[in-house]
Length: 90
Image 1 (tube, rainbow, N blue to C red):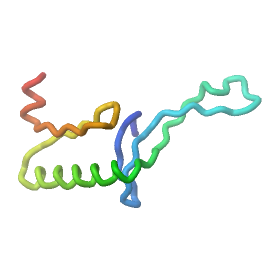
Image 2 (image 1 turned 120 degrees about the horizontal axis):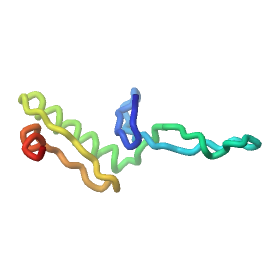
Image 3 (image 1 turned 30 degrees about the horizontal axis):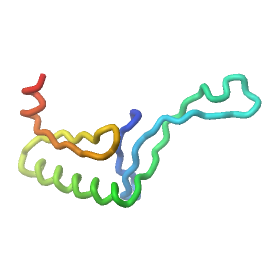
């Protein structure tokens, strides 16, 4: 199951971000109250950045280093954090 804001690489090799959207159905009492989670393909700039980040993550994993990637809410910064750094914060 996907969650709002989740980044995914689709079968066609392109990146998308899940986004929650309202569904409007004319003539229905609950129009606008129904929510749907859809995958929205990102623009070319983000495609390149995420491909580079995925390559970096793969390199870390090949060396046995566990890394968590986080994209900020504004989609302006991608942070890579090792498992040791993550557990030290908790």
